Amino acid sequence: MDYFFQFTPKAKKEFIDAYDFYEEQIFGLGDKFRREVYYFVSLIIKNPLSYPLKSKKLREVVLKKFPFIIIYRIEDTNSTIYVSSIFHTKRNPKLK
Image (cartoon, rainbow, N blue to C red; front, side, top):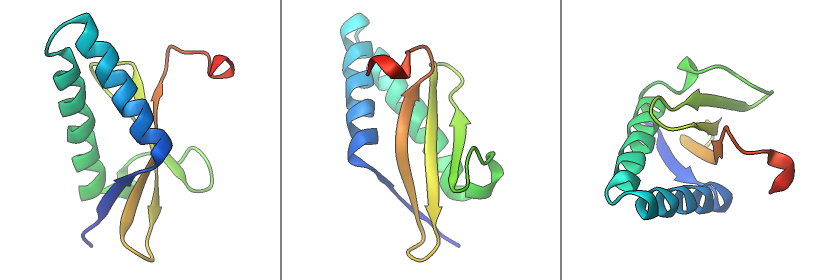
């Protein structure tokens, strides 16, 4: 089955914020972050069941070079992978 993917508004904001942060630190680092996120999204699309369930519907994959987790869910009714969060693993979620 071929899947599509879509970022939720929250995930899109997290992605843009992280991209901007890394790009401000070192020119080009934001692009490296973007490529890694899209690389893992492409792996998810190819085989969405290969990553562990963390709740009833949510799965996650850990990035290798950046301290982030991609949290997603599969919607079989419309063959879509919804990326619900690109979560920074070093931040305290209570401080958001």
